[in-house]
Amino acid sequence: MALSGRAAAVALAGVLVVLAVRSAVTVAVVDGLLLAAIIADVALAAPVGALQLRRGGDTRVRLDEPATVTTTIVNTSRRPLRAQLRDAWPPSAGARPARATLTVPSGGQGELVVTVRPARHGDCVAERVTIRSFGPLGLAARQRGQHLPWTVRALPPFRSRRYLPGMLAQLRELDGQHREVRPGQGSEFDSLREYVIGDDVRSIDWRSTARRRDVLVRTWRPERDRRIVFVLDTGRTAAGRVAGYPRLDTAMDAVQLLTALASQAGDRVDLIAADQRIRARVLAPSRTTALASVTDALATLEPELTETDWRLVTATVLAHARRRCLVVLLTDLNFSVDLLPELRALTARHQLLAGAVADPRLAELAAGRGDAASVYAAAAAERALSQRAAVAARLTRLGATIVDAPPDRFPAALAEAYLTLKGSGRL
Image (cartoon, rainbow, N blue to C red; front, side):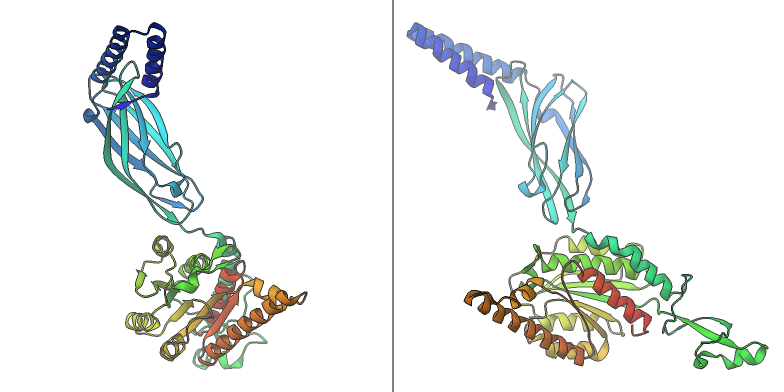
């Protein structure tokens, strides 16, 4: 049982009556009337045990976008329901309204529509719905909490989606589907056509030319049906904020862009996210569901304040990808030196594309010379930049392609590197 604010107001009025009359009989009468009214109100309230609740609505939503969840209440009792509902969403879900008042006739049903706008990616879970059924006087209510779980998964934002049309146009150029065709260096045979001045004589198909009077050349297209394995570092370096966002968030944005692009290019994608253990794994989704599957797996990832076990990561990649593929490693260039020996095993078997989110503030600090504090900051920034350059040079000598770009350019730069590798036939 729960008392309402109206019951407190009636009790306060009774206190004023008692103070005015100042007799024990008045106290007993006022208390008796109030108690009788509360008991009668609870007795006349619709029983909460006779209510049937069910949920429906959205289960996926992009971060900072609204989702709608509807709770339906069916009143199977013979009394009208005057209810106050509280849906127990976590504060980060941004659920509105938090409370609602419903009136449901006997045998009827009512709905509570809650708009959820998550503030961070991941799962927002509502476990219980609490119902207070008030009597006709509104003094007291029967109360009951019902376990009614519902989960809305907040997907990471896809801010780099705006680059996708331009990237797809470049992909069509590589495939020869654009009227301004660029001469690619793909390794898959496409078709034969007549020789024109300027064609590479090495592309002449002499057997086909011998059968016809015209000189025919082979045309090539970028490889299709290649495998791309995303390796996402969720260790401590992924928690560092650059331009207001964690490095992990920018990396997830780039993974979504490259997944969408690779799916359109006819390539297959896999995802491995790890630090001290494997946090997420998406293996061989279909091209039509690749973006949805990868995005769904990314939604629950958070940086872990621990060093990444690169031996585990490398062993997982090598065990999973036995044939040559493109490994896209998303980490920071200030990683532990333990990774460099492990990368030799990767580059010996696979093509490696390493992507890192650069902090543009380092360049700003490195230019500071105003006072002693700025000089010390500039020295630290120069040291960090030189360390990144040294690591990038070592990775390049191993045969890796390096993308080190600020957050606003990182997803597009990584996608452009992928298209360059694809156009040059290096996948």
